[in-house]
Image (tube, rainbow, N blue to C red; front, side, top):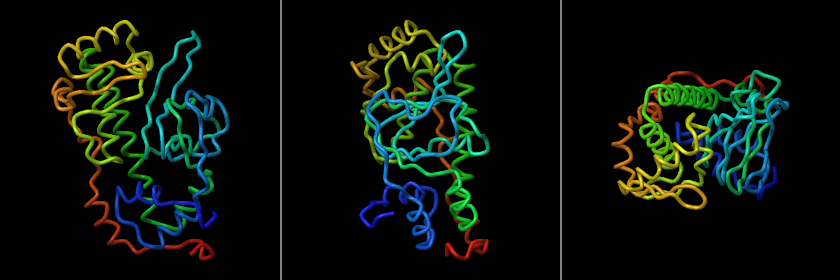
Length: 261
């Protein structure tokens, strides 16, 4: 790693969960490689390819997808800056999904062996990764409820509010307006709806002055109003940082590989 490489963004994403010691910051920074940039609508990896790396998205948006045999597509998740992408393949040789950029994007690559290095040398970072995995699992469970038990209007509103909450985690206060570079066709593939149905629902929400369809996606006009339509409860996005910090204070730190200390 060169001295000129700015690792503050990466450290800040981990400190969203719990404060890091100087040693943890140095360990994390030592593993960071220069970011890779991708143009809009570029494939980062394809379904079935080797799972050699995971990434931290620092700029832009991306989405994971699964191509079906009959030619349809299921969008599995949409990623915003600050998200860690590719962890679910840590124990597998091949990717279960593809990854495409939604906009010009910048991703910091980490190799899977580097993740093992973090686990072996920092209890704090190890626990943060487990917290991230648990949070992703909670998002997946809520997504299942959204797909199976809400109306089309509630599905769309809930999904958009969730994206907004995830953006807020990195950007701070986003007010009541937010531009989402997510085309309606992509929303249809994420929500199990037809494009016609999504378009009709967007028009309904537009008439209620809650959002505005644009050429590149959607603009949320009234986030709180959209939250009421979705009956949104953000519990599954809010990890218990106080409990995590208290736990880490009670457990002695360790270093399996002294050469990295």
